[in-house]
Image (cartoon, rainbow, N blue to C red; front, side, top):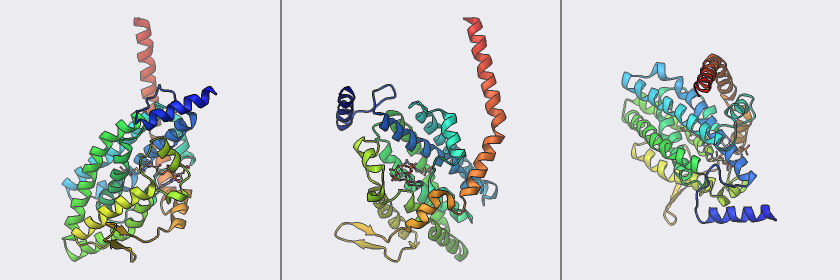
Length: 314
Ligand code: 3HC
């Protein structure tokens, strides 16, 4: 009976729009859902560094190199905020990272596609970070305090990421015929995988209803996807680019763009680990983790010695 009362009180707090903090009473399922979602979000940020990191040494100018370096470093910081926010729920950093490295945890499907040209870096900034902004702006109002607060700074940095991407897209779309061909080719390859970032249709989403009931999300996967399409079709047309969707048409009545069906076989194939770059991404991540072992050991030894000297001094 008492558990029932606690859950009712908890739901009343959510319904009143209150923020849940780490030490507050919360249903175990709420805690587990947040650990799942936040840790996978953190994994996505860290793995998301890889496709763009490949192009830092091949940037077309010093300016582009500096901007890309700064963006990739931001993504690392986003991962760290989110791993720290996940730890406030009692999840150990080591455990969640082990789950990624042994293939038990997911990260965003979008990062399992190859970056074939510099135009991909432009389109990732514009579309992928554009999708992230739509999702993360919503999450900045999440019921869980540490997650919502992590989103505030992340969204500010994502907005720079998107702007730099769109500037490159506009430059190439207005460039030489080869540049125009490159940027349209990149849009053709990244458009549909970006729509998949928002997850399955609402009716096929086992987690969404519960996340909305508990105020973790305030919009469904399809609502977020629709906002993304409405905004980015307009931006594409502004710079003279086409969207690779023959079913795309504007509905004057609803004011929304109607778009074609996503290839859900491709989506689940990538989510299940059979995408074009899944193996490479995870192997690179495992190698980086192994190569960073000495840094972790040195930091742990330093912390141990610090603790010893503080205990002696006290
Ligand atoms: N890639 C991989 N897995 C996905 C996915 C995707 N695009 N979309 C859904 N899934 C998985 C879910 O994780 C879930 O599996 P699980 O239960 O084993 O975790 C399953 O498919 C069913 O999906 P649901 O819709 O039921 O799951 P959610 O309600 O959690 O929705 C989500 C999925 C939209 C990714 C949601 O978890 C979310 O909004 N997460 C926070 C934001 C996030 O992680 N974004 C990833 C991109 S980060 C990024 O873009 C960085 C930027 O700097 C570039």
